[in-house]
Image (cartoon, rainbow, N blue to C red; front, side, top):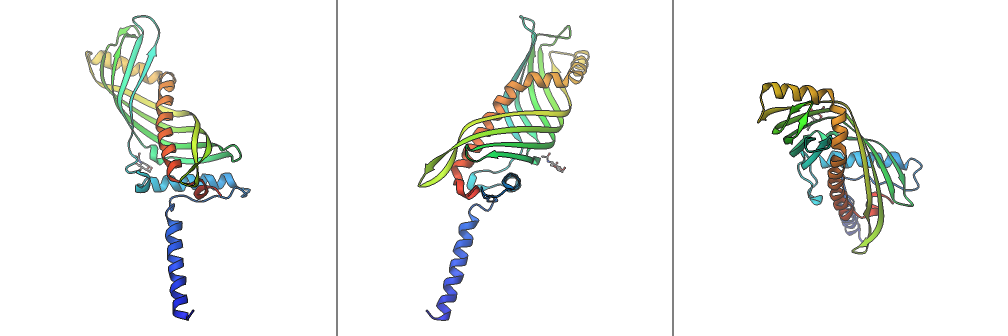
Length: 247
Ligand SMILES: *[C@@H]1O[C@H](CO)[C@@H](O)[C@H](O)[C@H]1NC(C)=O
């Protein structure tokens, strides 16, 4: 082989391998033998989030904001006059600012636990309610707003390997999640079927019971978030061969 052909081969080889390596440019690859594997997985997840926030067309991930939840409901008290509220078209802004703060993993059983922090989430929604709250007839509807500071969440993922087109991928078996919010401010506006006195009473009640209300919303919220997360992670696992992430 003369020098020129050799040089061309080297260039061609370098370029093609760079392209091949680049097809999963949004992931940092981790080695299972790495004693700091969890730190590597954390870095990989944060790299992925940073790319995701600019969109990853290959994964059909475009604009990450806002997070939309169709509907959640709460019920306080029993009986025909118990207070029920349904929140619809919930738009949450700020989730993409999340940081993965810790990862625990058991690679033999494909279990992962991600701990994450979101500094601030703003939520807007429509709500309708019925029943009696703090002795007032609180049936009606209006706009809901919520400002959540210091959101911490833990997400537990159990997966198993499958072969797709000759390559090993992960597929989900289980997702569990829980979260807490350090500070909550929320309220309702544009209360129809109501008046200014009712609106003020509702807002006083809502703000002095924010954590309790969140607790009531949690089961529904967790179900919806787990569902969203499931779709997102399954799509990611389907698109990325396991050994592009962990070798
Ligand atoms: C994300 O955080 C930055 C910096 O604090 C802030 O300016 C931005 O508004 C946040 N994004 C959203 C969608 O809340």
